[in-house]
Length: 398
Image 1: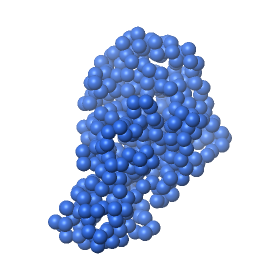
Image 2: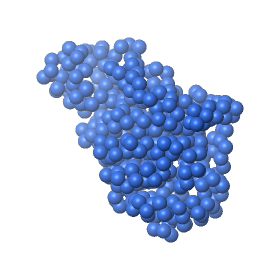
Image 3: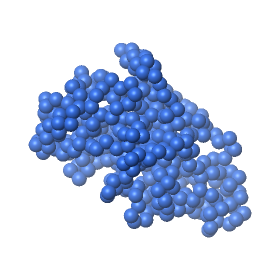
Image 4: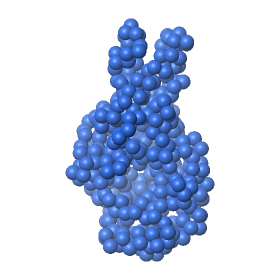
């Protein structure tokens, strides 16, 4: 099997085939396979088709409803079949390299794939919800200048199994099996971790379909949000084929500033992006588009910026809210967070225009788990290295 990965292409990655990494023991990980794929791998391993149809339904239930990792725990499957399955397959989880808990209760995990690549996920508990921030790539190609992940090179896409595996691991850690019980802590998922989800569209789609499947992890699409920096050609497909809530990393309202801090703007400009938002099929007053807006001192935080943001939202008749995000510092960052009073004034202008503009409370800063701070701990660069990498990317952009 070949998976598609994105090679480092600065703004638009080039899709090239990448051979699927095999486990050292040769077994196939069943997590992340669709129902049909699960049936097919059983038949390819020698199981008769009629039996494979039955066994695949049973195994699927144990994996996604019961959270079972060992085949021996699948009590409605004969013991002889346990041995056969265990010789050929595994129900995997990402390897946990480090687990941290913030003073505010936020949890961050550094995870490692079978081919030795590191990525992170974050769980943010609140009084009435618990949100898992899921990564879609190892590294990122977009180089948004306020984001720590943007200082990494893109290594590869995560597979559908690695995306689903983050949710499975979180359920393990929170003690939330069997699936679907009332009162669970993990209630929401945001595709806002490392990477650009729409540059790994197929794996993100396939992973989220398992998460949303009523026979799978059974999380409502209304409780899942996909965040994009503005990959306009893929936004319509995301609406049609995934159908979750949309968040857009806007962060600026002028071409000059957004070109600087979100370089994909040079390819897909603000007006083109906002039209794609207006066309997004799931957008309505009950499911508003969220615009993420990081507050950078002296860069994008003026009253004029706030008024222009209001004008654009009204121009495109967008059912929208604006999340104002105080900039979260990281080593080597060239920006500062806007003053608290400036953020409040910015928020007030938007609220007064009838658009919700809450100020996000930073979470997990003490463990580098806040928005824009995710980065593999295995790849720590000096300030000089960060500057050199940024200059290299900017030069390639022209």
